[in-house]
Image (tube, rainbow, N blue to C red; front, top):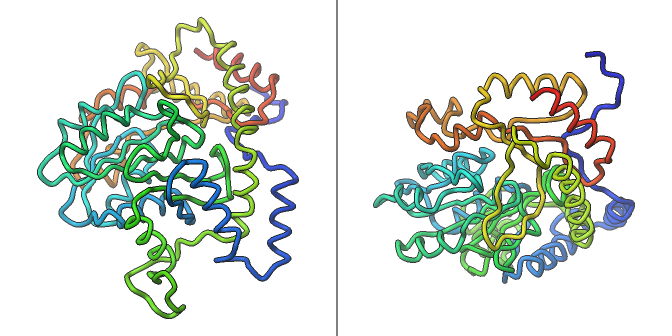
Length: 374
């Protein structure tokens, strides 16, 4: 097809003049890193999540890494997580020398299934990482009840769920610790960035130290108490984050309005289904993903994706099964059929263009092209 229309981006950040001005103000100061904007962003974020601590770092991936270190999880330990996620939520387990284990997902919410997780626990299991998939929290009460009974630690991966709640409790606050990411396709962005939130003083202390080359609280610049990394987030990034967080309700409302336009146009489309919401969850819209019915073969989905891209419409196959990534198959012997619910979903998902500035015309064009290709 000869495309003459402007391409529709799969995602884009929502940046206003306020963020630009905030960055310029920081650039006029000598505090480009380890300065007051980092503290301000952390304090605002802790208030948003209703947690005692918030520790800023350079990515959601680093936030996961720091939290596992803070929980003293390492070699010989197993951590159970979902195979339907971005790869950071399982790679982080290997960063600390532990072994990732997967459990299958709920067919409706697409989140980690608590019963499947319980069945996967062994004597080596030390932790669980449920993921708030696409802005929907799983049944965190079930995970915490299981963890308390089995003496396990739980990290809520909320990288896709800032602003979501479960029974009026903020995402990220529902486990021993929560993590967030601020890549430009997220609800808010800092360019790159992440955050650990927790009420646990030990996790917070270790995360703050390890992100800053292992320095201790109040210690000198060349005093290092433990092995650490440079996972710091600059004041420039945090200046963007402070404004974005101030605008969170506005941004979430705009994203919800875009989702509502998609919902209206796809209502009654029986060739597609969408993600169910966990009871008690208030979703925070991260992406708009549809699932083809089981009659569609994976190659049919891939042809739809290819054609949409050829027509200038951004799209993706969120998510490919983690256990079938080549490195995981080679390292742990995973194979097709190990997690059938995840695999059936992954073969049929289509992420459509989604961001706060998406126009009604863009949505009309996207839905029209999708329905023509079904």
